[in-house]
Image 1 (cartoon, rainbow, N blue to C red):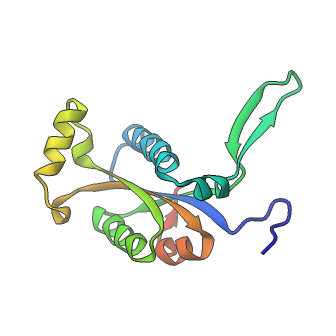
Image 2 (cartoon, rainbow, N blue to C red):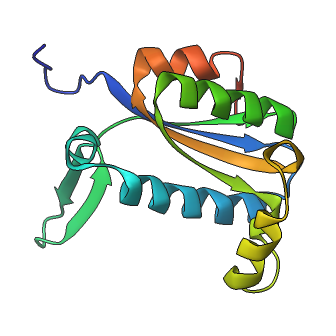
Image 3 (cartoon, one colour):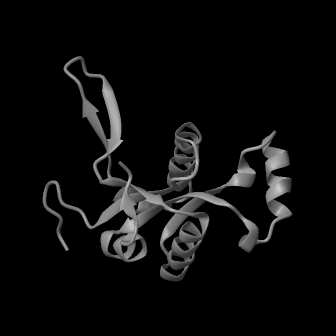
Length: 145
């Protein structure tokens, strides 16, 4: 299907726990945003529509031309369920859990490895995919305000 200027079938969604300090969530959101781009295949990167905005001096300001919606979750279990739905729909996603926040990354990896999925405290989820798929997964979340 041809896409007209300003129209696309894809978007990004960040779901963040409202129980976590905003400064910590900004860090988690940045990590997830970097990781989702790194995990994307070539076709997904093309669909992310990274576009160079150019200022009057010729300076480049790259950004995605797509929507990036930030939603809030009441608890970790809501994020867990959205993650499970993303897995089932084969939607590209990355998550951020509490065990990723202490000491060095080596210690964080070891701490995470000691936890079963059901014991992970989800702080965030970043998704990229078709709007219809993401809306089905995240439709019950509220916009972050």
